[in-house]
Image (cartoon, rainbow, N blue to C red; front, side, top):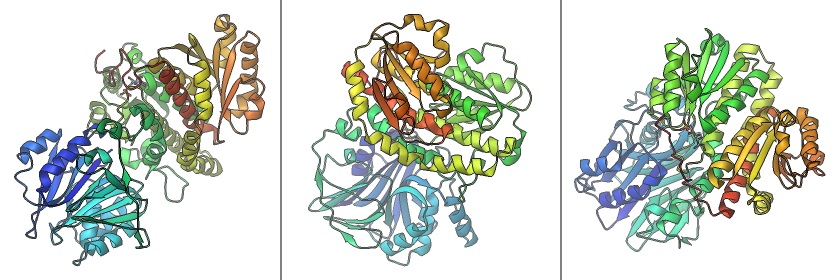
Amino acid sequence: MCGIVGFTGDAQAAPILLYGLERLEYRGYDSAGITVNSGAGTLLTEKASGRLANLAVRTDNGTTLRGTCGIGHTRWATHGEPTDNNAHPHVASSGKISIVHNGIIENYRKLKDWLLDKGVKFHSETDTEVVSQLIDYYYEGDLLNAVRKAVYKLEGSYALGIVAADEPSTIIGVRKEGPLIAAYTEDAAYLASDVTAILKYCRDVIYLEDDSIVVIKPGSVTCYNKYGKVQNLTPVTIDWDIEAAQKGGYAHYMLKEIYEQPRVLRDTLAGRITEDGGSVNLSEAGLTREILRSVRKVHIVGCGSAYHAGVVAKYQLESFARIACEVTLASEFRYSSPVVQPGTLCVVISQSGETADSIAALREAKSLGVSVLAVVNVRGSTISREADYVLYTNAGPEIAVATSKAYSAQVAAMTLLAIALAEFNSGVNRESLLAVLGDLRKLPDLAEKVLADVAPVQLAASRYFNRGSVFFIGRGLDYAAALEASLKLKEISYIHSEAYAGGELKHGTISLIEPGTLVVAVALCSKLAEKIESNIKEVKTRGAEVLAVTSESLAGDFADSGDIVITVPDTHELLTPLLAALPLQLFAYYTALNNGCDIDKPRNLAKSVTVE
Ligand code: AGP
């Protein structure tokens, strides 16, 4: 995610802003910038794509921008490539307002058109610039008033830092879902995305509440709620060290990223379901209705978890969109002389966008003359640049080697594709569309509910952490979820496990089941509940212990057969893998924790496999 820093006080701002941005580098970014108020009615801004060092060089470590009040930003690109021009801060055409932003302005296109009609000139591709120009449009000498008017028009999730040339020592912060903190000392005050940026100066931190605005001046922080009423927020004393703070207080980046998934789902769905909730809009990816209508088959390629997201999508595309779908490991696709029929849309799924096998598969697909859609997390990555269409997953940077939030974002993005293809291909009826889209919009809240109840998962991990091997079984979409659950356990706990389609056990693998063998049954598909239940009985009679992951409405079916039963809320059949993933990620996490494994950096693994 992007990083925000603000300083106003009795020292030069630029070096303090650069230091704060360095502390936020762990969040991942692709450009950076700062604005300093000269104190003489002008705003001084420098921005640089690439590493923060480029900005430090451009500002001679902050010495070329003189002033004691300013804002800084590290950008993780969402709208607009990672270029100097798209980097933050964004200064309004008047030169009088500058802002930094973390989040997504969902209605930026509508606002941009409105401002363009009023003659405003834009100079970037970002959603953020709309906010800067909007505040400037309303600014008549009172920054707080202009910010209130502009924010009233915004839709989406955002954290903002704002300065105005004519208010030399004031910074305004705005929080709507995006994290933002403030702090003050006797003669200074700070704004930041998280505490790591300011712990060197101050440990008494104010966590801004949602829908709030904060006015920061040297020695003071005044918070207002959405009704404009002053909030008396008590500062919290932070006793974390910097590293603990970068993990947001979580023990590992992986756990932090597991808990980011509700926000990641919101951000990946944001702006892609029409306002009436009845349709999917993937035009930002270049996928127009005409292109979607022309798709006769989908061929998905990916590696590891990205491949598993593709297996989920296969079930969704064939069962809901009635479109034939093949899923191939990228490392196999590139050497298998694939036959790809005309009218096929090749989809390359990749978090990093730099996986060598997936790049090669993309190039192989293009050499066969088919169009390629990239479902990718990193802007400017090779796969995003070489694909014909790009649907970004808005997971933000993923630090842990074992993916969690990026996988869920991939599944969410592919779910949107399946629904869009269903709408334009199989003529699925409107009730079905409304039903699945309605549940999809509720999913982030359901994910929060699942993540809030971690006790059953911790119990399971405490009981099973020392098993020599584990079997994951499921049918249909549950089998796809089981594939990813098995990989998660293997890669961070080093316990061997295998995922099997439930109906496949009797064709060989059941010979491995003996007293004490752990079998994790993923059972959220109501149509196949009886079938998986008989598979559970098969393994139980051979002495296996069963951890069942099921839905609230099916829990009764497994109460007797599951030694431990973990339930998730009911949702549309098509969406169950998105909820099943959460307890299964946590099971892998706590199992690895109990085994003392290096969870964020598992042995032998790299975050992006850029070699064959
Ligand atoms: C998943 O936890 C692993 N980190 C790995 O399987 C990963 O999904 C795979 O290497 C693909 O990476 P990509 O998504 O960056 O292409």
